[in-house]
Image (cartoon, rainbow, N blue to C red; front, side, top):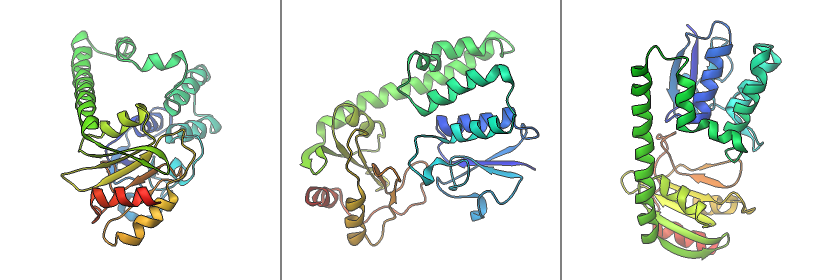
Length: 268
């Protein structure tokens, strides 16, 4: 039995990479999909060692972009592999190039609108058995969109209640909320660094704005000196420091308080 392994809490990159494998790689269309904590492998075995198991966007194998900071993603790695192996119909190469580039670069040109809901509905029409099927799919998508808007509205209020301070990275914000949208929105609003603590699970996430050229490496080292309990993941880009997430809930929450993290950030 062939198995595709990807991380928990799938995102567009992991979903699209699975889609490419099942759609274009011979004998993999019926492969079983297994989910593991981000960064790990199935049964903790060596990645890419079994020809009947493909790891996507996890495990630091050939289809996981997290082992370096190159401007790529799992979807593009899979696409390039399929292209090199001549697995793609010639007429689909250009459309797939645009699609995989768009997934990798959210700020693409006009093509980005083809991932909007109204265009997705148009794309579903030739594939659906009937109109009701399109409605049922779109209802679920609308539920997701509604949740996103709800999260954003809540995030706006939570940001107002956050603690604003100056750090080595610039204007910084500390939040205590389980709303993941809050930190994303804060960075879009111009904050250079955002700390978010989940009050229910105790996990923390520290991220700096993509335009900031200063790494979080020194902060990571300072936190490790004081935190003897929590597990921290330092992203190769140098811009993200994670103490657990929905993609990898197995990491032990930090023993440090939000105020203590703020203190460390201020003095680094």
